[in-house]
Image 1 (tube, rainbow over the protein chains, first blue to last red):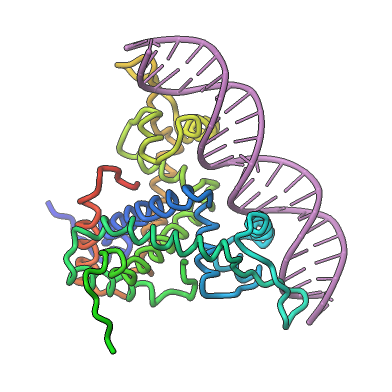
Image 2: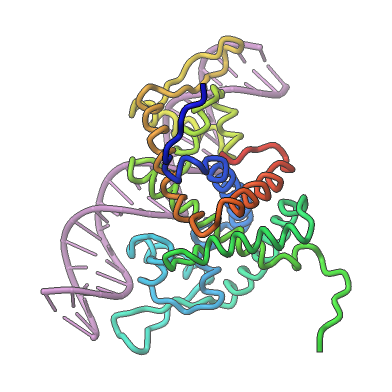
Length: 153
Length: 153
DNA sequence: TATTGTTATACTCTATAACTATA
DNA sequence: TATAGTTATAGAGTATAACAATA
């Protein structure tokens, strides 16, 4: 006998979608992680460089973006700076604050890794024809647009 | 003037889709990571428990699933075993091998975290109506079905 | 007094290398 | 000889706590 199903919570109904999202998330993260590792970068540091590509955040903003403690960010940036990937610059408006910017080597590296990431993701979307790719992109963007504000990158 | 675009490589054309996939990946991973952290589990250990939910892999299989070295897996499983989440059992067919199984506490925890993950992802898919959710799930599943074999979980 | 960032310390995760037991 | 797993060791990532400088 089929159980009556009166008002299941929303979460339960979308198990299949949730599983697909989670699996896709791991598959994509694995690619990015592999590309980062090939250049000696953790996934977190890849994300930092990606953010610096078009922004000049202060330390605390970076930590907030990535959900890390400020001390963790201090260490990450210190190591990245030693490697010549990023640089610290005083914030002109608040003398307590420190901005983080890409060093030339970091800028070159992030562009190279971005190209590698696009190549690595191409086979994943290959099974979808152009129209389906547009649909997928639109659905994901609608899903992401409604978020709190953090932009995952 | 619109540039003629003769045979761009596939990767370049899908920059928007790639960005959406990557952002979605980070947003989802952040949710899972947060839920795991609330129970003192790393994302990797969450994935291990998820795998053990319906499989009884040996150590080396677990390491392969997750792209880790076997020594790394030894340490992860040793710590998880000390916490009563998993157990090691001799493999009946190969006396060199060790199977990993869920301990009762681990089984309870993984079900609880799964429910929390479904709840956490519900707001993300909330902007999509039921038909769009079905479309998104179908597109993701077609994308994932064509992969090499690893199943991200 | 609150905020920004750093330093000190400790634990987890991860990898490389060397080892034991079994195949 | 090759494979499965563990132990030893080291480095990166992360958090908690205490501190200095600025707002």
